[in-house]
Image (cartoon, rainbow, N blue to C red):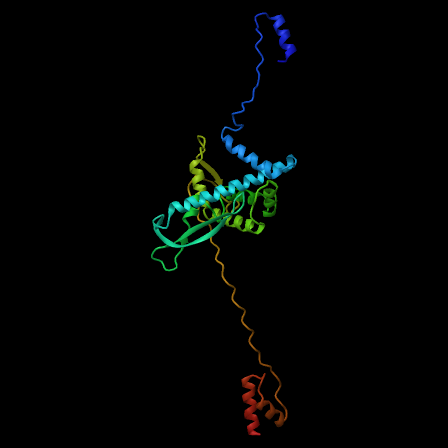
Amino acid sequence: MGAPDRKLALAHNPLLKEDPMLEIVPDAEASANPLVPRRLVEAFRAEVDERVGDGDFARREEVALALANEVVRVELTAALQDIVASHGTEDVLVGDERYRFHETGSQSYASFVGPLEVERPTFRKVGVRSGPTVVPLDLAAGLLHGTTPALAWRFARGKAKDAARDLFDDLVASHRVPPSRTTLENKGDAIGAALRRRQAVVRAAARHGEALPDGARTRSKPSPPSRNGRSGSTTTTRWGTPGPPPRRWRVTRARPRRAARRRYATTTTPSTPSQRCANARSPAGISPAIASRWTMSSRSS
């Protein structure tokens, strides 16, 4: 209700009382976002002012986003190093298997804000010579194929909709610091392959958490028609029960083709003894029966 409408209503209805107009006074001591301490905001703005100088707002936005990425990158790297320090080098249990300290190495983990360079140890399975190794940091922090959880989730969604090139361009346009296109492609394929291997587990967990309405416990699936042309019957399958195992196709290597047998040439019997002797001395390309017959005839002559 505007000011003229308010005055008109007061003139026609004397029971209404005019309320005093509210005055908005900014609190100099309060922060714009209660989740961010004011001293952190002041320090951030001071750093942005120093880097921007006399630049315009577009330059300030670009510098602020780059500075925020750098701050988050330093914080995430320090958090991963704290997890490594908390584990130490003592034996670790992964499931029911024991792993012992192997060696310490550096690893670069991809994230939205750039690579996270971390020094972390690897552990080898006890009792197995040159056995498999694990990285406790990856298991504790949820790192998947050298990628942080948030970026791995973005990879999975992006690769399912667009190509790796489009995903890379979108991240760069959003002022993020993704890995190279080749690394993005390889990590996306590795994450997708890992999800496909655990498809049955993920599907079972998703179905277990679903809230189905009453009466939606089964589904009908028509069977294929029979040979006599009649329509197939309807079978009922319960939700959550495993279906028939997938058919495995046996891939066999084709047998090499055998070389065709060499056929012996058939010729007429030589007319002169000299020709018979020459053919008997070089029976190549002549059947053994003809060669022996020519040999006996040449001896008798």
